[in-house]
Image 1 (cartoon, rainbow, N blue to C red):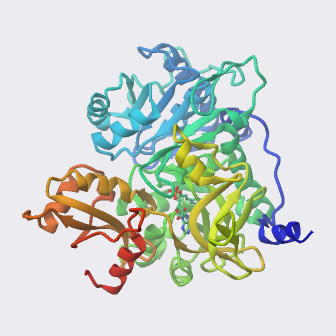
Image 2: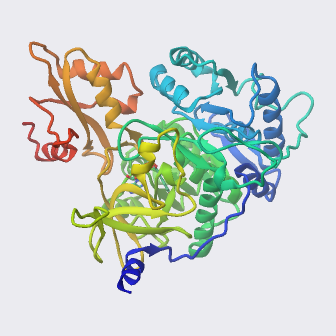
Image 3: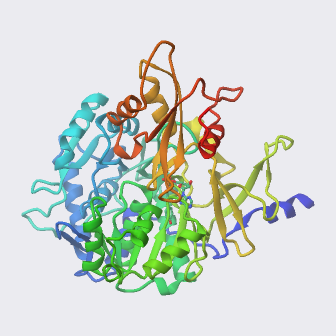
Length: 563
Ligand code: 4UU
């Protein structure tokens, strides 16, 4: 009799109730919402080129792009096919995305700054049949396709021959989203002869290393994406209706290939009916100009960008006077920095928390003006518990006592069904329907969660993932390196941000400088993954089972001791 009560106490449910997401494809859901807004209103505006896509142009543009994907490409795209979008933010991004989904296929997204070898890994891993990129990255993509041995077809966005341009024959196309077969979880095809089930059809494959190892394809279903948009939108509607203005202008700076940019910024803006001002990269001048010129009032950012706005001498109050609300996510923002930033910028700063594996949103701070340091409350239909390792318990875990820190485990319709082709990693991450976040949290009496530490391997650089295992694997390919361990070193100038630090063991009779090590890595991975500091050590501390004791390495950095 006692067990159910204890279980009930240990599981936290959302204070914002539940939602019943419609059983629709993601594209059908988004297109129906988009259609409810003024067809002449700009939905996306490219801050650099001025290129605009209105709410009314969206559906016909998707229909045309789908037609071209299906017919113009050297091999037809359809159910079971995967489109890899390798592009900076642009107005064509959602068009290409939904054209692929409308045909029953799947979309994977990659960082356009990847080197050919990083991109080649994703091309083979996700099994991309088609790749869309922009002109400047065409050669990189071509090289990556060759490296991967794939026969993927490459197309170009943003040119006259682009699949996303309106054709000479007009853009009156309509598309039937319910028609056609779809891609099943893990590949294969779900036939239309079966009733549509959004939770069993695969839609997106963003990449995440999860709690350990190399980047993996995160299988997100149509149901996951629809649910998370409903959860986010409904939470704002119920708890912060003042944040649902009719004429909001949002900032599309964070990359659309990452889950934050893809769902919480791009698609949230589209369904809400806001105008999204997109930027292809961060450059102080264009960033400030975009905010001022378009009167951006809601900006989804990561902590280093918030610090830039709060502290950089180039930022003058009149440049950012339109800002009313800044949403911070993807990395920790401590209470002090949050409050100081809100005061200096002169607008509210609130946090959201989530991960790629949860489509992404798990919590949002609903306190008006922001609850300092809080990641927020659970979005509707989401459950969480805090787990502490306990060798005495049969499961190896016990629930945290009230007020005690524990690993956050979450459950809800936004949780992925698993990693692509990785049943082992899936089984480690999903337990009884709960996803293990690898984050340590506490919760207060009002259901506000605070993320206090990260216990998974992941390093976060400006909100983007850097997988230590990837850099370690790369370092081990150097002929002079006997062993290596990489951890995130807190960046003193930017609280919450990290930089990869390598501990390296050299082979006997070899010589290597720190610069040799950083250069070796720099030639092979995108800039944000570059090793910033190197410490040579006689050995890498490991557990009895051979796992790197990262905590020990991190503690050494904290102590400033390198031995
Ligand atoms: C401390 O970064 C993301 C998702 C970001 C996001 C989600 C919901 C931003 C706004 C929003 O509303 O996904 P990933 O997969 O790249 O990284 C996930 C990890 C988390 O497990 C956690 O360690 O990023 C860290 N993280 C945070 N940490 C994400 N948000 C926070 C946060 N505080 N607010």
